[in-house]
Length: 219
Image 1 (cartoon, rainbow, N blue to C red):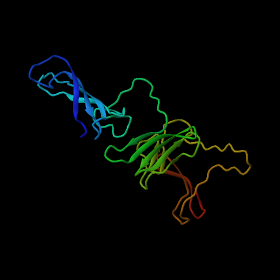
Image 2 (image 1 turned 180 degrees about the vertical axis):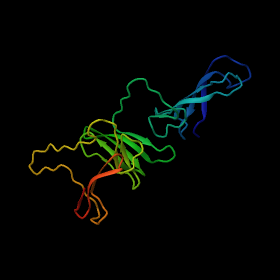
Image 3 (image 1 turned 90 degrees about the vertical axis):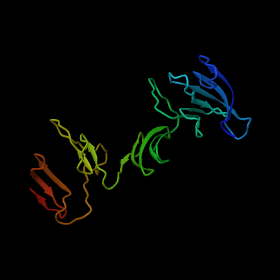
Image 4 (image 1 turned 45 degrees about the vertical axis):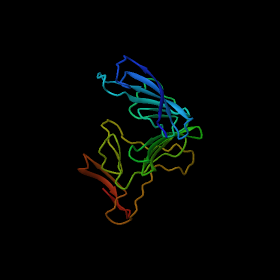
């Protein structure tokens, strides 16, 4: 069966009678039901106690797949169980996925789309945020999801807050058509008490003007 240990090479001080109790070792290991499929297991010990058994730190399967921190590459060419630090560039060709550690759900994906970059954030395996280098981008959270710019506590679906001595938001249409518009506001219900546009000042303590859903301008 799998995981049968074969011949090994031991490194470190020799302590008679302790068998595998040694500093480090490399051993042949069966990595498939077929006894002819063999890989290599690398054993190390971080303990100062010579009576502690060495532990498998890395395995190379018979088909070349590598597992670090685990003995199961789980179908990947390289599987790492633990934290990884990189102090240089990381170049990845093709897609990169982030998975939920407790399920198989995708939580984020960085991918190529016709030679352009795309980045998706998922909710229940469905993209809710997309940034696309040369295509449509969107934010569409759940019914209670709010988006804040300049604040981490948004109170509206889209909340912009910034302490600057200038206009906070600028909407500019640079289209060439004479019919190009500027700002389009739309609400679902055209009933009294619904305001497609409302302008206030001083933290909403004073109302400057409003347009209600039946077309009245309130100043």
